[in-house]
Image (cartoon, rainbow, N blue to C red; front, side):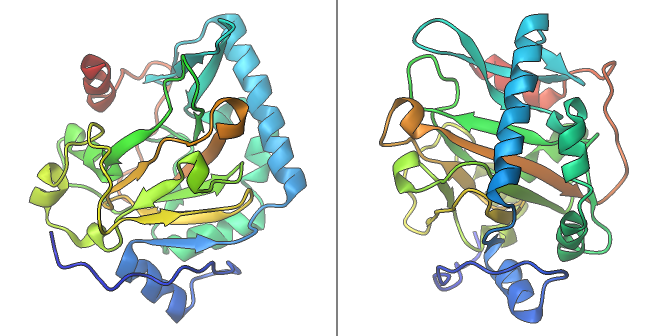
Length: 273
């Protein structure tokens, strides 16, 4: 891996449009950036409500897959099921689609770069992860991984990608929080493949940064960075941590449909469980 940059300052920026020189330098140097108060509390509450409606609909119809992407379900202690990982979420909610047409998201796209687009119909679409530390949860933590690695399963080198995360709950150290290795987006392909055991390695890294966020905050991270989610120190509903991830992509437009087959990286993930 290339030499690590000096530890990043712990700060939040404000997103108003294309990144200014300081913000661009921060993202280019560390591979991530954090913006405060992007969405209002009422908007966050709306998203939570829409997720509840989507979850109820999927449970009622017994849906297992969306556009070839498996839905990850968990089981509560009382035996009821819930969604740990939503895929293509915005395609199931008019209100979410309208929210994503707000001019603020054009500022996000512009901040990513002129060639980027929001991939609502590509990859896994708009993903929502629900981490909760309780028996039956499939998402209590997530091991070290690199998002761009999935491109190898399509037979190509990793493409430029920024994962944009909107926090739907406060995400502090006691809830596990996002851990990221600053500067790891500049690593070689060899280290991207073999620097850590993808998804199985949960060990602390001496260079990792714990990114604590408030509900409504927004983060970008480069798809080539090593990152993970720690296990919450609390349990039950007190540990609930929801984040919406929006893929901003370059390269060929590759939409998914209900006729799409399950990608190899998800087949591989299933085989490991």
